[in-house]
Length: 257
Image (cartoon, rainbow, N blue to C red; front, top):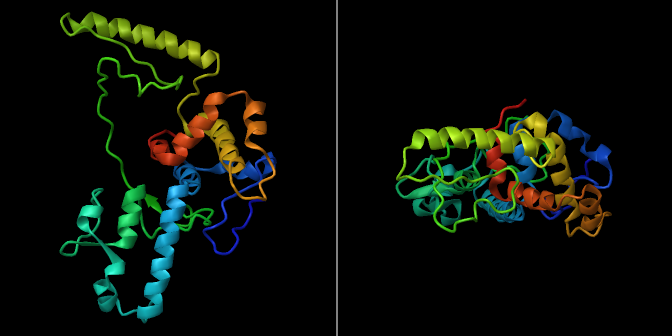
């Protein structure tokens, strides 16, 4: 079973027992939107942001009340209730003069609409408490000389070179054939998994277990090394961190199957 959060709600981190696969059976039915939430809720920066937001929100409610008796006019005048528009570069938030309400600013920072969900909330997506903001398509990537940071150690990425002094037509056709060959080879050896929610579900479930095994919660029963060694995949923990630390938004672009 998934564990409940202790009080205060935002301090507990461990979602499930990473040594028990049955605790992660819920992942079999997750949509891409729900997968994105599972990684975001494990992000320590989001947890800290939410904790600070929650504390401020409670303080504001203590002064100005809760709906339907909230004095919203006075609430909006309190500097704790808003940030300057310059602190919300993501846009899409309603701007009142030069102010953006903190709940909208926090959602924009992390890529979603609606009131910022508590990391303890198992399913704000299914419950209608969170919806993801639409992301613009990535532009074509141009790597400069010696720029290998984008490649890293990710077997799902490959870079090819082109000579702009020569006609591109034949180069592009040759590149296409080469990419197809590399893709088939890496899919056969298991280093590349088809990019769909269904195809990546097992990988993502292992990522969640690794993240939960990393938890500083003293109740966490499994050492991280045990799980990482069990799966013999050094890149898996790096992928878990990437998804937790911003890559969760990439999940929203993938087909379900």
